[in-house]
Amino acid sequence: MSETRAIYCCGCEADVSARLTSGKEIYPHRRDLYSLPFWKCDTCGNFVGCHHKTDDRTKPLGVIPTPAIKEARKHIHAILDPIWKSKRMRRGDLYRAVAARLGIEEYHTAEIRTLDEARAAYRAVQAVESALQERRVAS
Image (cartoon, rainbow, N blue to C red; front, side):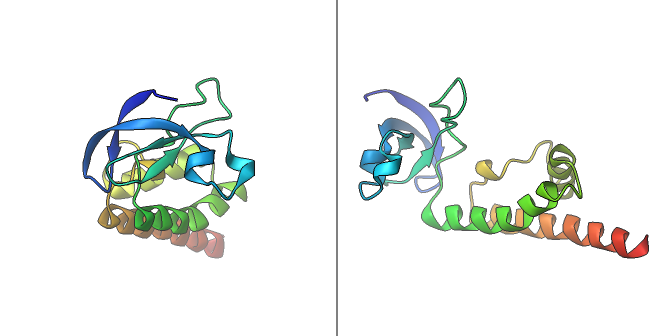
């Protein structure tokens, strides 16, 4: 694979010419991931997965995170996903509520670029979760 695409890299703090590669390079110990596409920044070595289950299977899942930002995103999803999966709030409404609390037009966890943004998003999701719990108690 020799395709490249401009993608923001959190490690380099810039748009980079990311290289399309496979799971065989990214996760050599995980044979089950060998056939999956990934975008890699060859400058810092960070990478991002792709929407491999869609028609555009090489579309990046978001910006290329550092390991710390990737871990922060997991913590955000740990409190964000149960809200919509439990049907306490529709996914789109939840993401709009988080965006409103952050003062941005649209929210996507995969677009978080810094740990400060991750912390703000985490607090916003916690605030939405608290508001939902308060409504449930008040009913």
